[in-house]
Length: 206
Image (cartoon, rainbow, N blue to C red; front, side, top):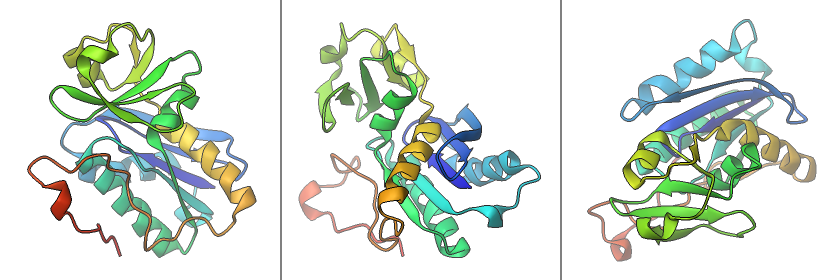
C-alpha cells in the first residue's frame, strides 16, 4: 500500500493507493494553520481497518508551495518512511495537481502577496509569475484562498495526493530504492519571507 501526502497549499490531501498506483481512498480538506495537527489523524482515519504496517511506500509532494505546509508534510512523510522502514519518493506537487485535472491549463500555487508559482501544462518546470500574468489562463488548479485573492474565476481545488501516489508507483517500478531519506527536501523557488536567499543553509530533515 502507498501512503501519499500533499501539503503544498491550504487545500491539502492524503491518499492510499495500491502498489501499482491505483487509488484506494483519499481525503481532501482546507487547513490554513493546522497542518501539523491534521495530517496524521487524517491518514489514520483513511486507513480504517487497514494496518499502517501494510505500507510499502510513502510518497510526498515536494512543492513548490506553502513553506509551512511543505515542511510539515515532508517531516511526516520522512517519519513514516523511517519508522516503517519503507522507501520514500518525492513528487513535484504542481505537476501532480495537473495530472488530477486533465482539462486544466495550469497549476498555480501561492508564492507571495502578488506572486504565484505557475506551471503551465507542458512546461518542464514551474516559474514565479506576477498575479497580473495569470489572467486569461482559463481553467487552472489553485487553492481556494489563492483563487479568491487573485481573482481566478475558473479554478479547481488541488487533489494532489492521488496523482502523487500514481507517479511514485511509476518511479518505484524503475527505481525500487526510491529517494534518499537523508537528502530529500521540498523545492523552494524562493526563500521564506524574511530570509535572505544568499544566507540560507541547506535544510536538514534527519
